[in-house]
Length: 308
Length: 249
Image (cartoon, rainbow over all chains, first blue to last red; front, side, top):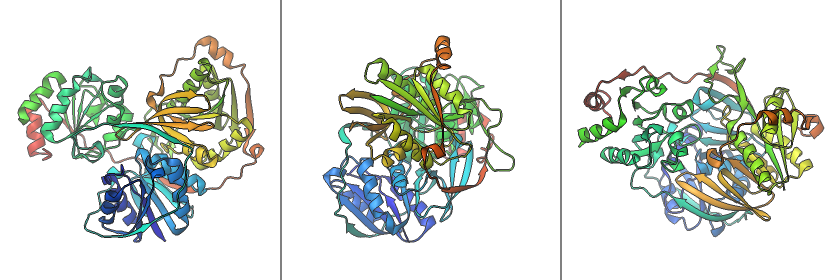
């Protein structure tokens, strides 16, 4: 049977996460379909058609789907489920919102945040903030799972999969009120090659300007620890950690971050980790490849100067 | 408005767990246990709704062996009115937990069911959404602000890239994110008072719910250790290493 991947998008563009989830799907089986649910999302459909390994793109384009509400998107997925052995989505805020509803309505378990495919019914997922990895075998007829996108490479482009239009429409009791998304010219945290992250040690939101300068020198994204978000220095969508974004960039520069278990859970799969902290005993140094025990207010400007 | 808050007993957030030598599970023997931090935030929010006059009663429920009564008492000390303990020794999947909670909700008929968004042990982030699906309720996950408005509730939620606001007709399900509130500390008089608050014990059989085995844990292993790093003496040395040794800039 085929594998269904729920596309991650904002009606305008397909997120790279979907290309990564398709890679996970290709490790499970051959016949892969991508479902695009949204409103006026033609460009997303085209981008999904181009993904290597995708046989069909199913499209449910209707104004009731504009806000991607879990309630009715789940009902649509359940309606399609009889044709599929696996239903996958990125472990994004949308995927985590929607897929458990699908699993419950199908009376199956969900496997969250899959980081490796062992076989078509056995998967690896982190538990306890990544301090243990559980290999779980599913006995359910349909495997419903969210995939940690940072654990998979994106599938290539250059395909032209067939498009199937879906007509059934499911309504939701949930009402969309408003949305405000952070606009940034920097790369998205989830897909950035380099991330510069700040913690409580930054002292204020203004001081994050220094990290933004450094990020721009490196073409990097800016992230933060929970402490920095809780203190109101930066918005919540920058949080890296167990319950924020899980990232695996080539280079992660942690500035003024002590390194709580919950933060490490979000970034310890980075290829190279740099820590800058004035406390040489900070736990962040235990996972850092390169540690610099220094005052960040001196080190960061010097670093920016070195890179200029 | 009655508020139902399902809560979980977990290993304390500050404890770093270890995998058992036989790779069957995580070793939780003799570790400090606590109310799951997200569940604590959910309890706090329910109590605040009661203090603000929006809620009339706060009922907490937990599933597990007798030890979970300790966390139920904690929730009562934070201000919940009564507790329900569903007594089982079994390790249940979130979908099974959601089915049991649905049976509780059929009796309780709460207007708002407030969950923590995930437990910090299983890291599943599923139970609230599953419960909402089984009871066909609207949901707002990852909530950072809640406002009750007559027969509906407005919820600001943290999503990838920013914030979203949804309005849900009641009854509804909300799952709490970190910044919904900062839970209070239970005062000693409230801890004493909590000991006398009602705590009912039910079994799975009492609820008449049939559960299935959905998956087998094949093994639990520690993650790959990172290679020990080095300390550099200066910014210049750091830049040199990143350029010539790690080759990442």
